[in-house]
Length: 270
Image (tube, rainbow, N blue to C red; front, side, top):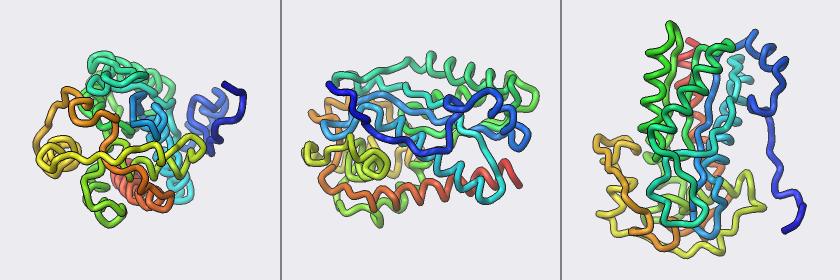
């Protein structure tokens, strides 16, 4: 254990890193808040447990920069580092919240920020297992306020449509695989070790229920509840992390950010 710098985080600041005065000034120009919802869970030996949290923050960071350039400022809320990760509990270090706890957490964070002046919220996940709770919390906030607007943005759907044009792998890449490893290589290469990742792919019929075209999280119409990732992978990841490259991560982020920006402009700034 050392006191070396692990990684550097680029701006703009999230609400956590802002002073109250800075937030008050931002509220003069926008009432839109992006809430990054991450997780702390195993992603294999090659990725940090905070992968989903880092991804959610980076998506919001890039979106905020784009929106600012286009004259539509937004504020990035506090990064939520925990999610519903029960099916990863077979691996050391994973932290999970029950769905009811996550709903309460997101609802109370949103209502607190509503009381300070924010009116339009975009919940942006880094972990798709939290999407059901995020949707319930969004509805609760709307039900409990006279004018709040809340949407949950699932970028996995647009990304899954073009994954085959971005990744090298021709097999099923999923949790902690080529794509996700590539995105963390872009922002935190110091704590990513692709060489530690053992290639592990699932039978296509099994993969379809985890991240296939019929699954609701990737644009389908069926929600498949997951019992245990360890039943599917002894390593905690699905895919071949050794194929990861920063340029693949950049292309993935570009697709995600383009889509999120287009939705925000259409629904909150038109």
